[in-house]
Image (cartoon, rainbow, N blue to C red):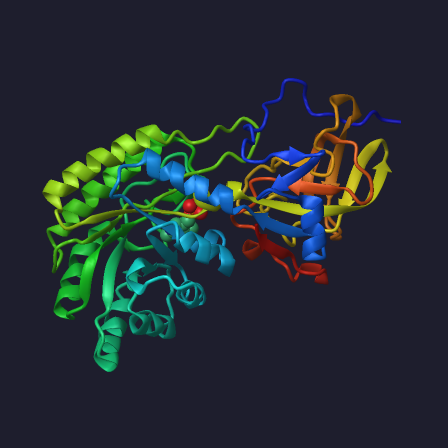
Length: 419
Ligand SMILES: *Cc1c(COP(=O)(O)O)cnc(C)c1O
């Protein structure tokens, strides 16, 4: 018989998870034991999001960034309506990327002047709904301009626009690059002056620029560099604009540590950088409000995914905890949402948080799907668990339920709770 393969001895650890306490050996979320939460919800698996952690994260950002920087929540990271409504009360604006998200934001009571709408391939009906609602449209293609001008006439309402620019640089060290080189996002920087001319001749209500260089970045100096270059590009383009810039979205890309060896993002240098840019903007673009838009940074660490162990199997010496959830609810934790090399998210047995080291074992957590991709933890050291125990995947508040193929294999969908 082969000995079970264990992870290497001095392998890098996950960044410490300071947000979550436990009581009587059971993990708490928003002060509630996850065993009780499972009863209240009536089923597993579920996502649970902590209001306390969401509030603390926004407060921490406000304390680290200069006053006057507007914080927008990019709701594609987690569009659960109750969470969007809660976030709307904490941040300065909501960024939507479809008419469906726009509807959620409007239903959450977000004032229309605090909503902006970005995305390639906006359909005419989506542009119509955006103008009718009075939200800011981040124009990503010359095709949108005549459509918006016609809507302005037909609806008798101003079409508020900002131009999303595809910069001539990229965000270094980004998990997902969304600028520099050929991209489907935004308008190439060199084509923006002509586009701005058309915005003026069509009489659209120009407000400013949107630049978004990338996502999931843990290097403060790369984010600072992208913000500086974005600002300077917007300043150059402003010379061609038909009206003063009142809105300048410098993007986001703030990352969170998911995998062993990753460290939390340092906010202090970003705060200093934004303070310097704000000072320049006061002179060079005096009407401009500077905006940072963040998705995962606000919500990822506030959320956990909880699934119940339905079987415990040993195959040729390796322990498999089979749970009632998997990649159909949490594609990212399975390693199939943009990762190049599969790595483990932080995982724990949430019903055995007090288990001493000598009752830990190396186990893999797998879901019920008939594919080897359905893997939530690959040979991790976990408290020895059995049928009925609850497995927790941390860092799960972003790109979870809405970014997973819930229809795949016909298992039940996942519940969500804001606690
Ligand atoms: C996806 C996206 C975001 C959010 O990205 P995070 O990594 O979740 O912060 C913000 N802005 C735009 C334009 C996006 O496409």
